[in-house]
Image (cartoon, rainbow, N blue to C red; front, side):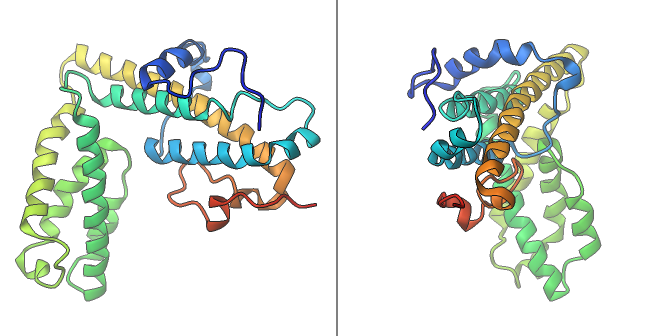
Length: 253
């Protein structure tokens, strides 16, 4: 395993502590180097932590190939993930009661279920394929929330009769979440817009810290597994890690 950094965060560090720990580094980034978040932050955090675990399991091999690998990445992967998730919440929790993050999680859950039902409806020939494709086109929390409003009309009673996984209660919840959250993601005042922009910039900065470290982990993995590195270190936006990645394998001899 990598040697712990000189001033490590404790294993029990909270998201607030992790955020404060990495904030100076995030703010020091050149604006030209900041990467805009274009993937689900929860998935990115999971894949980053999984990559760190995979590399940690073969750290001895990494040190045999590289003279001075960065030993701070693996032990700080979890705290940095917490900091990124907090930055993501801050970007969408402005002037809220702090519950928006959990509601946004529910947005994604319902969105996933409705898209799965829509695919089934396409197979039955009762849901328009072009409409589903159009709704899928966007990305991000604002688009995900709007997707709920766009998906609901695809499931009238006649369609629900053939797709029991969607019922009136689920559609009502989807409509309510859209009505509550969408206006919050579209601030109309200049001050609110500036604050939201600042919060999103910070989220992008924390994501950049994760992306840079993840790229380094991938490079370490390539030194150990060669062309099979992607089986062990998934991209940040990958929705599912391979079975080989779940259990770090022995590196090639």
